[in-house]
Length: 566
Image 1 (cartoon, one colour):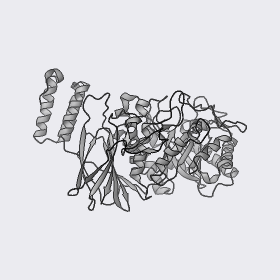
Image 2 (cartoon, one colour):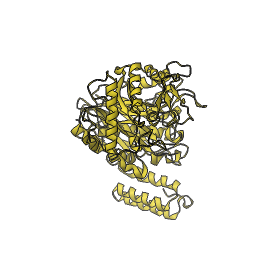
Image 3 (cartoon, one colour):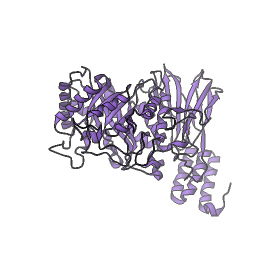
Image 4 (tube, helix red, strand yellow):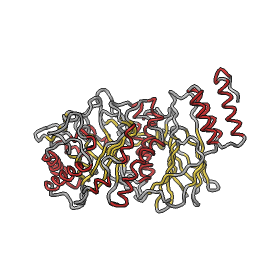
């Protein structure tokens, strides 16, 4: 096809023609694609780059993957059924636990159960954040937390207080275990002791997974909250000294603490942009263990925080969140710490204890709460599991845009499920309920864009489920070309005769909000009080395997979950 000059221009037509000739004379498709993209970035208007991208992709070899018949060497250990956890910023817990009438928030209860029931796990809930590290327990305060968190009310760092009724909020999730953050930033250690003793008195030690002294200690001091009331900047040695001292004070004060390790350590902040590489060494894990952080056998988990970007808007979605290489490149920085623990402290898991897709100063739902951010959340978790990260706590805070749901009406916003929630039933279905799953990344061949991802879940040594993401950006409101697709050929092990394919997508593409997203044809809504609504779309397929292979078409900005049948 020769497009009119007034659409592309003569120079561009010649470049496309040369690329096509090269392809049909058996030049390497990837090399052609790279050369075409380089030309496009220099001489072609943005809208015509879509045409060149289509040309390169559509003429390249089709994606192919061969699924191993047994657990490969790069697979994870067995995934904890409790891996899909939650986190609530201190003051925000009030609205997530109770509705505006003061009753248990059934909407929140159901949404949590819809996730944990898929693995047979229990909710692991972290309560805390920066506001908690600089907060005080007021024994005669009747309100659970002040100021009360709202959609347009940013957390009050240095001004948050909690009262005895705060811990009663935890009773609204009776099956949960809690990671209880206690203040480390406050120099008066009696404050952290007061938090620990009061929560044990309220909910009992059996409801507590661990205590967590401090939050992001690598960022001390926050704003002007420094000595003498709050701690100064810490290095490895001073962090270890303060952490172990505060943990010892809690152990001395709470006689119910069991003899086994009971503390979550580190909880280091994420580092972004030019400082991203610092995630490989700030509050260094081997160094801190060498300095004695676990000499008394107190460390139960090592934790880090993770956000993919430092801000972002709708125009940044493709590069900011929907980039497989950006996700894996950042997560690979944690491998040295993960591997050191495996070799030296194999009973201590490495977790991500506070997660959101981006650190926007205020919420931007067009970036943080759309299909593209849900796909980020899927790829982030599956790659993390594959490299040995054990669990996740996704942060919920009333004013943020990355929340999975808004639990109550607030500042004119109605309670609702956000797009990011849809990642969780997908990922938990992928891991499954056997308690035996191991995860491995798959090697997809001949996929020209470099922005696909594939994973396999193994049980009892054989593959059971596959997940594939096409992270290439397409949005109905901004993309000028039709939504493209590619068909991947999957070679499956002997004995697999059919596959069932569930889809996570929206007709509107990457910028879609939750009301048009489905996973497996289902939705979760406030109108259903967070329970699954089945049959919204009929897009689940069952395909026959022929000659050991099956071909599945995946559209841009979509993910599929493939169940292997026999």
